[in-house]
Image (cartoon, rainbow, N blue to C red):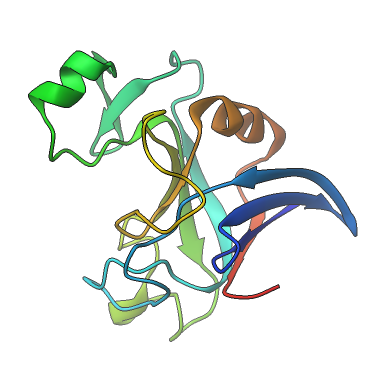
Length: 160
């Protein structure tokens, strides 16, 4: 199994060999593609899922610093904290594999805290709106989370 994220199409595909198992609409960075620390861009290239966080938590669980905050996202909470960048339900933390491109130094994907994670249902997907991460619908993320393992290859590219 491999995950392929297409930035230009705003899709995430789970593939098994040449067969597309599932395709999801996602949102990547509003600042576009890029690897530099502090850029708020989505990093390209080959990555792996380094950690899976949130297994067994309820849908819409809120994560802060990769820890369950004890909150469950709802519109009242959203109104209370309108500027919060919501990380919900599950986290798949990515680590780059290409030294000097997306691994180590000022381009290290893991040190940039780049995840595949859930977002509020009200967030727009299918267009770039994130701060660098790959955002998904919570139900889709739960399904994907259950199908992949730590170490799964994740390729992020700009075009098909």
